Image 1 (cartoon, rainbow, N blue to C red):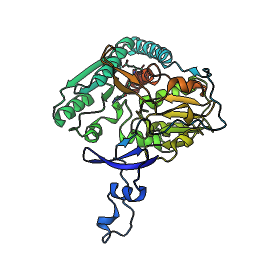
Image 2: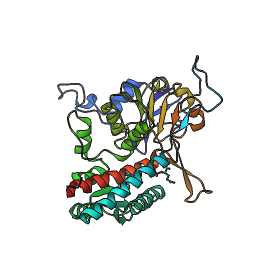
Image 3: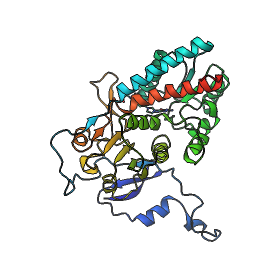
Image 4: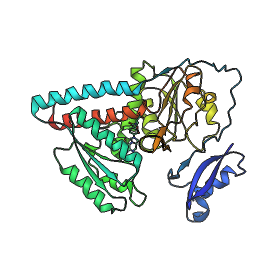
Length: 370
Ligand SMILES: Nc1nc(=O)c2c([nH]1)NC[C@@H]1CN(c3ccc(C(=O)N[C@@H](CCC(=O)O)C(=O)O)cc3)C=[N+]21
């Protein structure tokens, strides 16, 4: 198996391919559009900054199943299931009692604004679930729904309106946005103090730097950490592998694990021998979005596996015409790992619980309510 660079919809993409004959060094040079064109004027041959803006294409089944020698894979389940749904419920009920206390003491409740652009079914479901969770916790929620074809200014206007609204303590722009909209530009105008997703570059930068504290930690990574801690998993000094390097999951979870003193490796679509690297990990957090990428052969005996993959798969028999699948071959993983999160019922519900926590924290900060 080799990494290759190919064109997807006219864009260059990095991906995995079996039996690819591509040469890594020459294709990489082409993809990052570096020195050849500017050789004469540049002092350094290296590009100022290598772009990460290449879609990571993870080819499903790009590895063949090859149980490692010396590792016995049991036929029985040895791992426990980490029940994200019930942990999330407990957290949500604690948020609800804090909201109640806040209302009784100062007559205020936290408020969350959600901006949904377009008609993706999965986004609609997530947003619906978020709003329902707010209602149940006593958090006021407002929503702006914009059509697929709306102008960038319409989304900006919605963000700015919620930035100004004192009853709103958290603003969330549901991602992904339709292709014609500039996500970066939109997220940049979102008020730092209301960035309950924690995606603002200043929040992310503060998360990355020693001695600094972000106002908000992104919900999914925070939820993963909470699952590990509540399951009694020791993190300090352990080897952790994060699969995927997205801004919203891979990057912040790797930073968070580092803050908890794990030794973190990041595996992505250009990584050589990802299976071998992952097999060394005590903790695996996978957010590649590739169903069944993680087979038991990727896992060390006794490891803990957090599956962040949420890939909607067409399924006419389910209520909304699709169902969610994770990155991990779940049954297989349970025969090797000591604990695994399911999809659904693992990280997803925790993401929503953490959103409620962040919104409550934001309101507490604004009102100086401890
Ligand atoms: N600005 C922004 N913030 C996000 O936090 C964000 C986002 N955009 N875009 C999409 C991803 C995905 N995401 C999920 C949230 C809840 C579940 C969830 O509750 N899942 C349930 C099942 C839900 C169902 O039944 O479809 C579960 O795993 O058990 C899943 C995925 C948040 N995201």
